[in-house]
Image 1: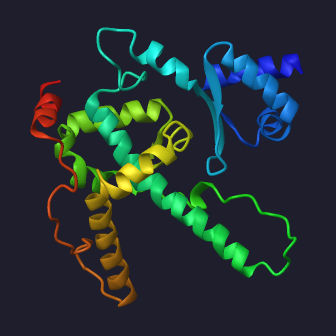
Image 2 (image 1 turned 180 degrees about the horizontal axis):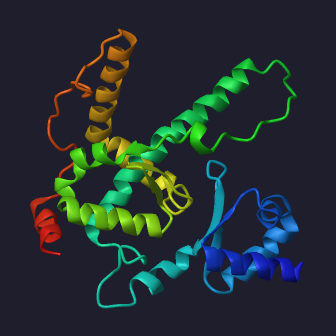
Length: 252
């Protein structure tokens, strides 16, 4: 067991994430004794295992009591330990809100639907759906149209997208952005979701949902646009940084 724990710990530190389907990852999730020893090994260096049933990977993160010594050790409190500037953090939060929140709603809805359709009251609980069936991603061009100018323009936007790709938060292919292995792990859903749904980005999500509903309605009605545009007039960026932050993004 000691060798397996060392191996998994080393892989978590070297690769940052390990798939849930991996043999050692499954053992950490299912074997209580193995999990206890793994937790002790990680805690010895100020870390803890991060996993949730909605994500396809597991990772390691700081213990809560190590937050202040790590983030507050310098002259100023760090808002992240990944080298992301403020506009990069803002972009990460926006991507999380637009990809993970709808994904979580689909996962929970399918679980509830499965319970309603289950005739055997003692039937085995099915694993949560993950991957492309519930996480659909977003268009890079649409994201820039809504948020690009507020986040520093094309150069800053592309630079921060590149950072998030390298860090494993998103996967970028053919101008489409999909969920990366870190996106649903390293941001605490319980803390951030209420702040977004009920506060900071509530209007953003409502306006985007309104646009998507209109697109769906037009598709159902068989309305097509010969020019390839969806024909929906934009009200401008859905999210605006405060003037000081926007100016700071231009200056960097």
